Image 1 (cartoon, rainbow, N blue to C red):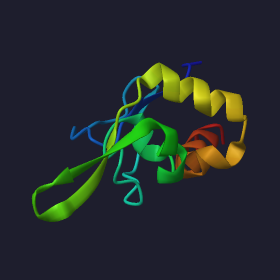
Image 2 (cartoon, rainbow, N blue to C red):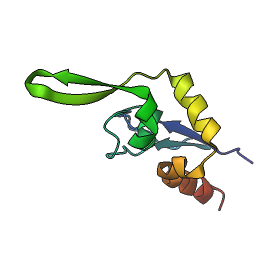
Image 3 (cartoon, rainbow, N blue to C red):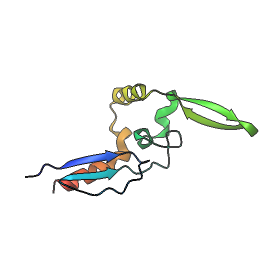
Length: 103
């Protein structure tokens, strides 16, 4: 029996990936509601979770933008310390996909 493996890529990957030898590719959907972390695994989380990990910069014409200043480990530690399943709501399609492979 071939072991099934799911290989997960961030939303910013643009590869044409195919299933092969029991390995199933999965590219996370882009979370359009997160403009702070527009790429990487951090994009899967709600913007509200980044409130302690951003700085506001003011550009010309008084346009303000939040920028992510967190080190990945700091954000990871924060998410883990919360222990809140709701933080992972955007991962639900991935979980559904994994479960479909066990059928």
